[in-house]
Image 1 (tube, helix red, strand yellow):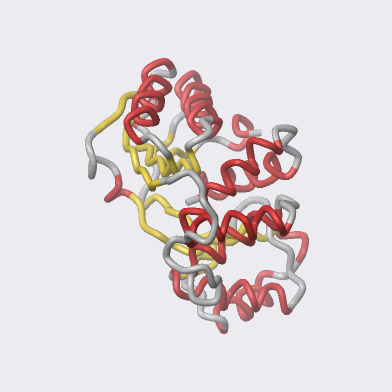
Image 2: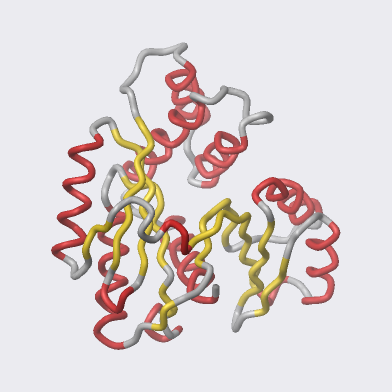
Length: 244
């Protein structure tokens, strides 16, 4: 859990200052487009609502978001994307689960397999590691922004499952269905978050250090940089000093 929190916080800060904003926008547009296939109204489509909020956080223009929704609902012509999930292992026996959106599943699978191989990992069959993760709403709140007891009262009243105290942050877990209720409670109380998402959390973690730690971080970053990859989940636990 702690490994996920640290990595999520670093990724969030990295994305906020990412010079490759065009690449980020491309990924977000794909996600919004695919999410909108299940309905173009965020009020009744949680996946679309999350995708739109991620777009807004990245300062994506409203027109871009609207076009992506219309392409997903069929109101505008566009490329046909499909969801793709890939599984594998990295250095140190770390389990890795990849979610992507692609217009050519075979091409994306081949390219992701190459990244695994070049960076010391290997692809595995469907179901090999997915059972090691569970879908949860997830928030990271910096300790400097609020007292633990006050935060706990706010999030538990809103339906959160748990609050974990870590070195620099609090990590809040919710059932996916309760994510937006807890988010609203945090927003209403003006509590900023380092990260807020519906994600996959590892049920247990694998401690990795030294060369394996460097290799697993290199593999995860390589996968995340692929244009068709939306999310990379891993069950590593790496010391703070290495993550920083």
